[in-house]
Image 1 (spheres, one colour):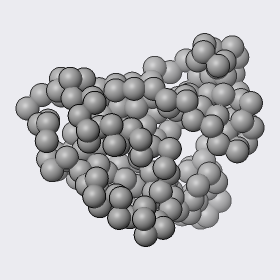
Image 2 (cartoon, rainbow, N blue to C red):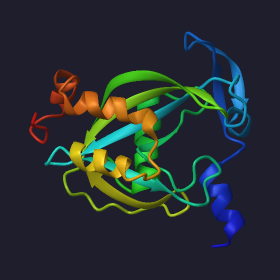
Image 3 (tube, helix red, strand yellow):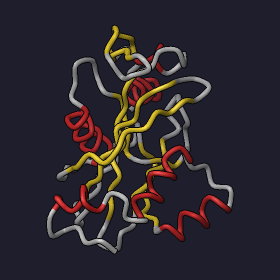
Image 4 (cartoon, rainbow, N blue to C red):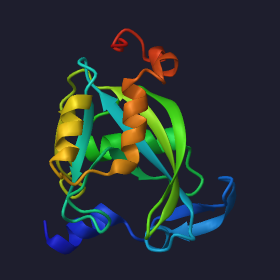
Length: 191
């Protein structure tokens, strides 16, 4: 596959997103390229926190084809398309980036600002029970599961990690979302 095709596949600049106000109410529409380059174009994104049987969280290294944060370690995440439900978007991102799907439960929403963009991030948790992970290489270079201690060491070593998510990870590991996540059934056990 040629580089320009991979870059287009990884970034989808013409996707249409809902433009939202400071209260997360839809006020218009914006194309993804404009949403990702202008912090006044607030939009919605989703993040999927996948945990395994040892309560480790899966992080993925963004491919070098990505225009935003290439090579950064982050969660499975993506944009919510115009009119799309956030849960539907979360399932889509999981399938597109990692090649499988699992039951997901909403745990929290956060407001993230960067120099280049602003968005509401809807966080979902799902359980990885050994499903084969098939990377979409236009978007993901590699994946790895991290315990809380592993992640602390990784960040302290200067690895390129999207620290906007770390607070949510810590709250997850501290049990803040246990009652919400427990609905995922017997595959989930509080540690």
